Image (cartoon, rainbow, N blue to C red; front, top):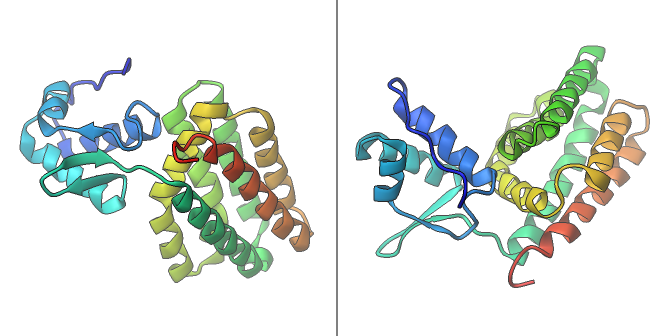
Amino acid sequence: MNAKLQPVEDGTLRAQITRQLHAMITGGHFAPGERLTETALANQLHVSRAPLREAIRELVDRGVLISQPYKGLFVRSVSVTDLRELYSMRTELEQFAFRLAWDKRTPEACADLQRRYDALIAVHAQNDQAMAIELETNFHSWIYDVSGHSLLQSHWQRLVPLVQIYLSLHHRMHGAQGEFGHMTTEYLKIATGDDLAAMQVHIGEHMKQGLDMVIAAVPEA
């Protein structure tokens, strides 16, 4: 691992530790399935065990880290089954979200999606994978925000940790540009257009293309 965790300054230690560990995971510096130890993390971060354990508990609750009794702490891994289930669930949820929110897309809402897209494109040029993944998640969260459907939003938030690990695998393999970047641009165009049927088709194609690429990165595939 070339990248190193940086010492944490005084302040909201738990929040800082949580952000940094999460960024290291989504940035690909900790691999899916990698075992982590409190001692090594505490030494690198220059923090005591108490705030570190609070941060770890939060990431375990989010589903980013897995704590196994008598075995240790691990970065969440993904299987082909996980990816296929994520693909099917995310496709259904996003298509439903667009059907629900299609008539709620005000000019202000569409301008918001454009801003999220612009921020995503800007960070791609900086080669910051962790931030790109966060902004890509924010880009796809837009339709759930517009829907105003609290239960749907809750289901999406539960999927986000696995979505971000999926995106991490994809970025490590293919970067954020190329055909995947083109699909994101097309997503913006159709999402702010006037053809709901085309949006539904595009979601299926967008998800399937990403799935096929990422499955190749999973060892059991």
